Image 1 (cartoon, protein in one colour):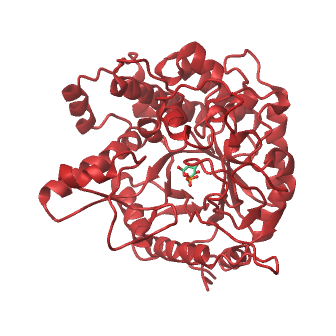
Image 2 (cartoon, helix red, strand yellow):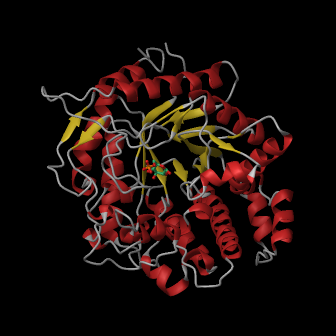
Length: 476
Ligand code: BGP
């Protein structure tokens, strides 16, 4: 039965800093993600233009409590199991394992926390999919080393990952090295802990930091395979093809350039070398990447086993400066596509775009794919009878699942799984809001941090349960 191959990994995804809370509990250290406030200053802090390396009284920091999953994970995982999850994607907070980032020994309490969480998944037959770094960098490494601009980060990150690989060798098979690695270019502080000094050449620093992450990712892939040859280690891209605003060749060319900005990372992680278009761009822009003699070999010999990605929307671009001006100030610059409807946050809804993205990635890399994020951020209301009727979310997911099934069954794309984002409501990464909800499970908490944290099933909960039980056949 079902529209997808047997063993397809249906599930859901979260990230430590957006759901755990307990930000200083269990010996955890401060990280970049903890000093990103809610409100007006959020965007400049995420970009690294407004420097914030500690918390103050004036701001509200949503990650500090988030949805308190640090304390409720057992009950939450029980709900995932009730939906029939085959897989749960979560991230490990680096600063729970190495609170400062450079200790000689890991924090046993942090390891024990994740061990218990993993055991809880395994108890229900849920396959853990672990993101090793979902945007977080221990703050001490930012203030002492300048984060990923510094080569020393490579060995510290490798040590952190080795610690997890060794500890969870027989419990976890699927790993992702960096969440949305391309975010480093767009939101450098949130994505990679980068801060800039006045007058610094930001592009140079970003690409040097990217090189360090890419080498670190390759070394970790190598070590992971040595520790357990069964490990499947993947990269992760914030995906969504860029369409051309018109059929003018200039617009088409521009859309290709935009896509390459993002493919760049995956080209290195999946093909094992810097693509020629990037080397030429470095030459033109005067960007010089400092490399160690063995780096090219490391990249070449340790490519990823699979390609995972998030997909929320396609993008649209124009070569005409008058038109493209409209997109200034967005994380991913995109024009409004007149053929698409948008979410309340302006994210355009394009299910066919998912099929296009799956096909583009498969054509380009010929490696198994994994959709590790997808979903609709929306305001949910509790009706008088206590129910939450999120039919808009069901229809978003239904159309995207149809597109995904078409890519698999009609186009032959190899796809391992589907873990929609924020399977339980959590803090939004871009806005810091709770109001922007993705979950099948509602969490009683508002943007100001008030609420009982009580969990409630939405209509989509039973719907998704049916989808999983029928392996994607029953989408009604
Ligand atoms: C991705 C991130 C997630 C996540 C998601 C939804 O960029 O990997 O951490 O939050 O997008 O975005 P948002 O929370 O901004 O709605």
